[in-house]
Image 1 (cartoon, rainbow, N blue to C red):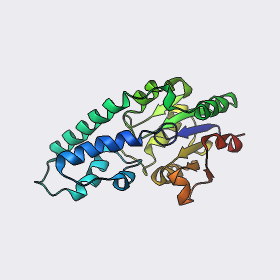
Image 2 (cartoon, rainbow, N blue to C red):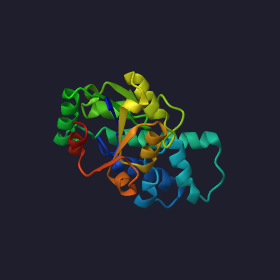
Image 3 (cartoon, helix red, strand yellow):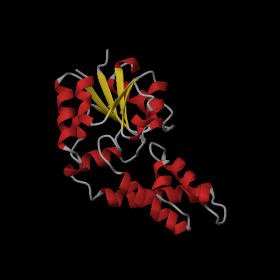
Image 4 (cartoon, rainbow, N blue to C red):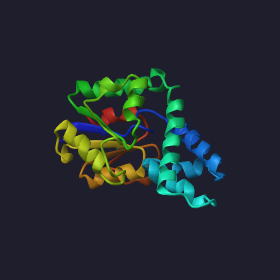
Length: 212
């Protein structure tokens, strides 16, 4: 019996891919590295440092120390947060707001499970913080998806066993993480194409047909 729903943030509740892309593109351009949207897709659901390593696969300059890599990742985050300042409540659709509200009315506990360290900041910008009972994000985990840690901690924050939780994800790595945690899964967007989730949906509001 499902009593709790854990949502990935980027690509599910809000769409910040364009800001991530622009932030990483600026770093890649500074380093003289080719970077496009296809490469950017490989970064979905991946931690900041792991994303940097993917970008550096094409790097041909002098070797970078760990300290230099951390500085690059932090600089990207500064670019990204500057771009996030453009976000407003209008960046969340009425359908998402209505669906979250209806799930609450039906008695489900709701949480965010995101690898992003900016999750709380984004939720504040779009006025959605109060829509969730808990937030598990990049500030409280050591391992990014497909490791299940972010979802396991979300369940812990909700005081719910993993087998009572359902995860909504748009990335294949996220679906794998949820399955590793023993949670039910719903895929939307690109994750639905992988056909590995318990349910695939086209629209966010389709959740209301699954969680009666």
